Length: 233
Image (cartoon, rainbow, N blue to C red):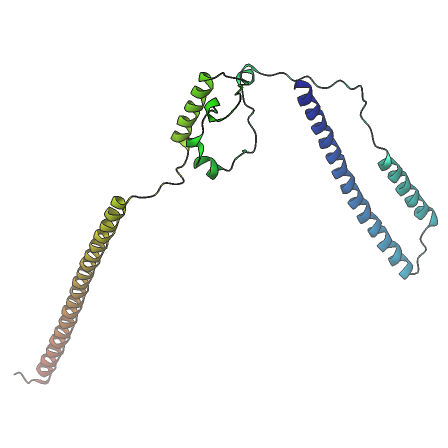
């Protein structure tokens, strides 16, 4: 099992290096294609302007491209006698009975709705024999029981449905909230109406005061004019 793990790690490393090399090669190809297109555009522009393009430069570019293509064709093969890397486990990893996978084996919803039904297989269920690779018998059952209890504390209850009692209470609560909302709206309307009436009253009073003040000034101006003319009432 250890050798298989080392082989998988080695293959993964090789695949990673190969993918990285392929990525670099593609980037180089794109860069070369852009440079080639640029040079070709410059050459055509020079020809259109009647300028001569040096043949030596064209020949040099072709030789460089051929040499680069030959270099790309050479693939380094790892030696067969290469020493595989040695894997060491920490004390915590040695205590683990199950490997932690990056992706779950079962969808979260399916697990949350079924883990409470998990059980240890027993012979009376029709099995000829039941073998335990790690914890034996009762220890395996205790482990599963503890795991289920832990899941109950942290998992979402996907199939939880409200009871008839809850539905009745919830409907009564909604009705009560509607009543409170209506009363609150009525109260706010009354307060707003009173505020508007108060503003209108103050405006009317201010207007009446302005009219009275205007009449008073007109009367005083009339009296002053009569006095000036020598006629007093």
